Length: 93
Image 1 (cartoon, one colour):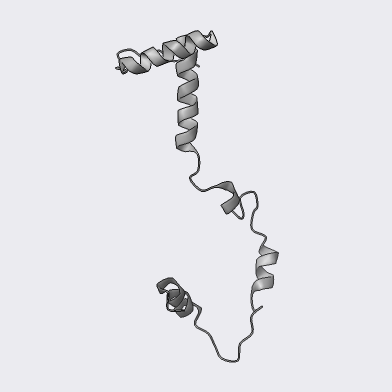
Image 2 (cartoon, one colour):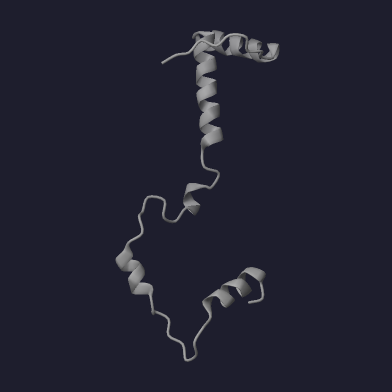
């Protein structure tokens, strides 16, 4: 689907650059602008977190695996997990 938009102000330097790219690649200005817009939108909408830092990117949590972790750590005294998490966040531990 294409939409025609009128009265968009574009810097003349950009138009000259688009014209040069179109001439060099032997395609129309419209195709150059469309490609540049697609690439720009893709860059702007892409996740800012690198893929290698996302541990569970393509994985749904397994409830059985999670249930195996419950009670896996044994201590002599009761532990207040919320207190420990707050201390870690503050940098006390």
